Image 1 (cartoon, rainbow, N blue to C red):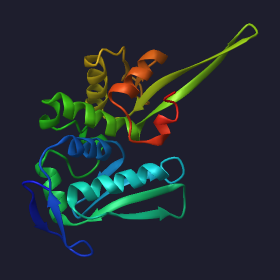
Image 2 (image 1 turned 30 degrees about the horizontal axis):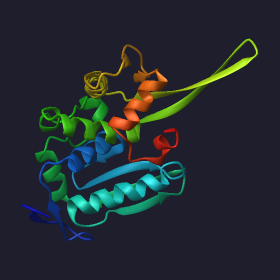
Image 3 (image 1 turned 180 degrees about the horizontal axis):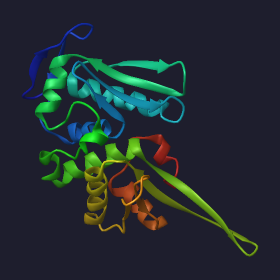
Image 4 (image 1 turned 30 degrees about the vertical axis):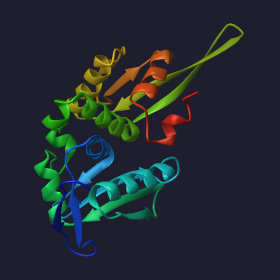
Length: 216
């Protein structure tokens, strides 16, 4: 991997690579901003152990590609959740160095790092990571008279206003008619038009089967 710097890391992971800025790293940042958590000594990504089972393998492989070693994956006994995680203060140091923050993301109202916002391909990759974790494609069904209708829509949910606005603004820059709801507790960004959902999946794409199952 070109121009990588090897850093020491406490057991059980002894070292990892510090990758250069790329679309892969931008997507990882989006994943972390969505379902990730970062403490002083550990980072973790919590996913649904049922619907995100395949996606957890993608996340593990992406982490390995970026950092040179596979993270641990632990199934939580009390609920349908699993955690993809690394231990190591040096990894946390690297991530804070590229603009991420330790601690509660909602309380800090975290946003997307500037280096991602300044490059279109990074914005799209980060959007993909955010949507694959805190978003989804849904089928809305309704009946008019004796006829049934259904259409696809995309919804992104997050309580950090800067993240909501990043998703909304990036979708708008792609020519999509995004709607933001940020004045209530359950804050969201929506794409209601089924043709625009198809455009999103064609342009931004998804690394998560949970979204891609509605692609056709």
